Amino acid sequence: MEFLNNHKTLFWSALILFLFLTLQIAILPAFTNQQIYKPLPDAKPLTKDELAGKAIYIENGCIACHTQQVREVEMDKVFGARPSIPADYAGNHRTDVWRNTANLLGSERTGPDLTTIGERQPSSDWQLLHLYQPRAVVKESIMPSFSFLFEEKDYISKGDIEVKVPEEFLRHKFKKIVATKKALQLVAYLQSLKQTKLPEGVKPQEFLYKKEVKKTAAGGAADALPDGGELYTANCASCHQASGEGLPGAFPPLKGSPIVGGDDITVYATIIMKGYTGRPGYGPMPAVGTNANFTPEMVTAIMNHERSSWGNNAKPVTLEQVKAVMDQLK
Image 1 (cartoon, one colour):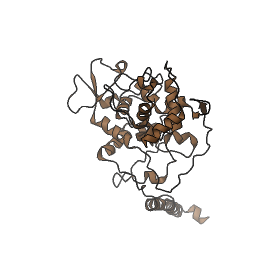
Image 2 (cartoon, helix red, strand yellow):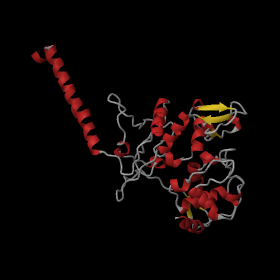
Image 3 (cartoon, one colour):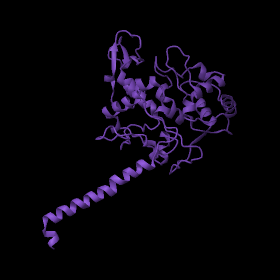
Image 4 (cartoon, one colour):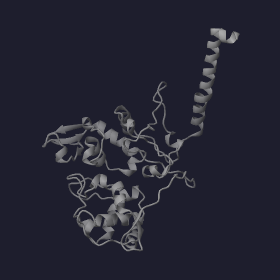
């Protein structure tokens, strides 16, 4: 009982136990992790602008609503081709001797996970418009507007990056919206978020609790295709809108589009897979299909959804037609 009655012995015993546990549970495992986990071979370090954008991302509290971790459950499959691994975060270094670099894993998904947002939505036009006014591209969005990262000008100067904002979201009808350096750096960081592929021959961890893939018959009863409406919503609606009407000056409409309703399947499929930069008045479309690893079945399903929606009434395309075009694109 002498041990319990001596306050000095109790204090030093508790302090030594605390320091021992800190060493064993926190410090030594951290050193071990640094030695074991290295960045994946194809991982690219952030550029100066991307690093600045990361600081802006933290500064504005984006981490509070967005995660950057793909869990091994099926519901996270929309955010990455594989679950996240420690090597995905091994490239981070301390800010200085006192501060560690935030991994930005997050703990909440009020907004979507951003692990691969640079692949899922590589369009800088979309990213800038989304920052200025999220509801201009996603009507149901509860994300706050980051319009303070933009300037209103009467005229566009050389070097200015104009954001094509729909008229209904403009504060002053005849003003031009121009992205500041901070907005461009934040977008640069978002576009850098891509899931590095595993080395050749390394099998990724499987997703758990797999859902049954919903299929529809399109282009002939023999063609069992994924649900084109779901694919459109996940990959196309953020720009072209659920109504297919697009956004004036930003993203072209698919409703009544001669490409969507035409007979040239080669041009149509090529635009989906490789993107397009030639339409006057609109920004370049990224290679959505290539970035999202679309299969011929997915492209066929999306085409038939677009060709039969919003008043479009074009003949369905077949899986064989799309396969033939995609074989030429390889």
